[in-house]
Length: 244
Image 1 (cartoon, helix red, strand yellow):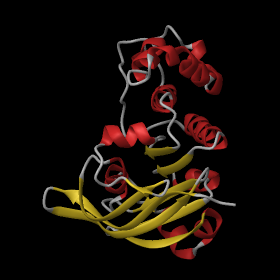
Image 2: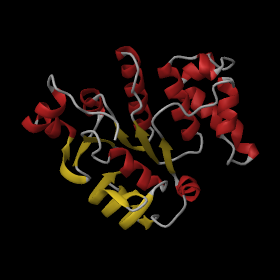
Image 3: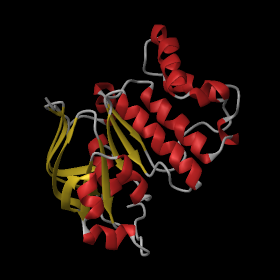
């Protein structure tokens, strides 16, 4: 029996007095991967930030595991199990991989640090291999894996990913997508905004499509991938998808 991890009810969100996302509704089933698609400025990143609580929610409800979280600050949403890896590098580049992982444990009781880090090095063996390497000296893909691990240390059951493969080589993009699948296999629900639309849809269960801040389409990833409108806009020779 499926369980709903996240419900968005007519969410309108943005910055200052400017709503970007308008009356957006959707639900994510636990343990699934959902890709969020849309053109430049459609509101994809804004929606992720609204779920995490780092921009203004004008109206609507955000329910996580059946409980409303829209009035909670980001740190409380994180404590309840919502993790967010924003676009761009967000590690400590002059610190080693091991030091970065230890920093990622800052909200955990000290007695749990070793076990949490052990789970991440088991899930991502690369981090054990690079333990003493400065994060800034790793490739973009390796840093992206480190940043996902830093968020996963706290044991979120919902992971929001904003453009995890942006700027990476095709090989490293494949590695990152494989890691996302590995994360979902542990039971974590994943909502991903991704410029590599084809790659993201191939690993996803569901897809949501935004246009001008509103929900335009929702369906299985396979259905959305084969829809003529989506193929024309994102999977042909004229792919316009960039970060919102």
